[in-house]
Image (cartoon, rainbow, N blue to C red; front, side):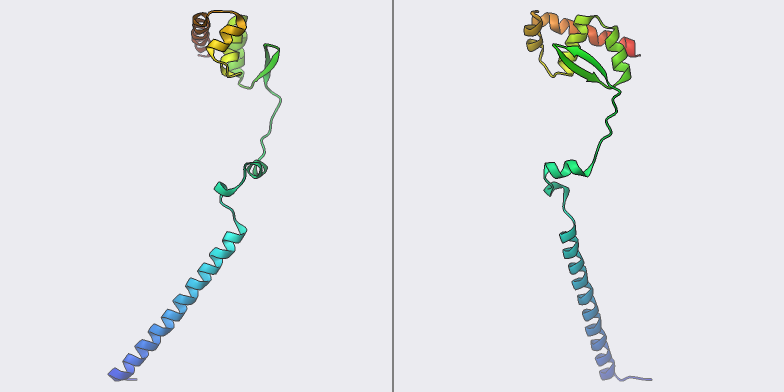
Length: 136
């Protein structure tokens, strides 16, 4: 079937109109789907902290070794660190536990143990050096 120029132009325009309708419908469907998705989903940045905590759980096995420092129980979960801490002298062990597990400063530790801050610093460095050797 042969079409003249005018008929070809009519077919072309009808086809363009059809394509525009189809593409418009697809765009509207896509926007509707995005809206439904927005209603069902929430961004992590918009979730409150208490709600975030309900999204996961951690298994807490009681495999921690407890050390006593200043009358407080300090749990240490790493086996290698526990072994190294047990081999340290008591004063050096207490200083390491206070620094890294109780988040105390050298100045606070010196006040608690009635030592000079430089002595606490020396014990810390010496303990870390000794622990490094023990853990190798």
